[in-house]
Amino acid sequence: CAAGKGTFGTNEAVRQIENINLRSVVTHREIVLPQLGAPGVAAHEVRRRTGFKVIYGPVYARDLPAFLANGKQAMPEIRRVRFGLRERTVLIPMELIPALKWLPAVVGLILIMRLVDGSGINTGMLGDFPSYLGAIVMGTTVFQILLPWIPGRSFVWKGWLLGMIWALSWAVWLRPNLWVSLSNLLVLPIITAYLALNFTGSTTFTSLSGVQKEIRSAAP
Picture 1 (cartoon, rainbow, N blue to C red):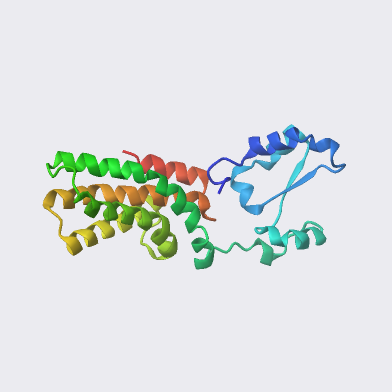
Picture 2: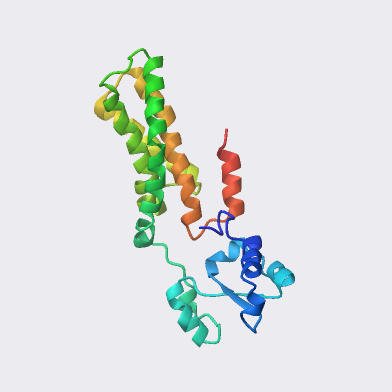
């Protein structure tokens, strides 16, 4: 996740080596990094700046003892990346909980839209809230579960598609007025698409350059 979004990279590896003065702690000049950290770390640059050779270890920390016992040689089975339903599902709380911080903004958006369409501030607002909450759930829960089966490669497109399905389902199910239906069709897919894009950093197959390209193509 950190490597994919650029948080853990060459500069961070160098900074940590220097911060703890690793040269005085160990006699060798090797450092083992997780395999999935490779997209963000230029091994040759780390060696040039610190003198430490980067060795990419296994995917999972539980395989580290076997990796070290095998002379820092990775067997094929510990190089294999798994990102099935179980691996995706355990990440849902990491996506859902931070997204809930946007709920006050959602309430504010509902207030603005109700003032614009003349319906005013009343208890009817409670009926609008679940549609936005549903868009958040679609982008932070349903998307993670259905990721391999949603058509397309772009996470933005996949998320937008889920959001549109949700908005259409809401319109057919509750039959709100035309203004509410149109606003939902515009806003809800965008919310879901944005949250789906956030999941790129948690996957095992996206890259920083790919994410940046997707953001540039999706941003208005």
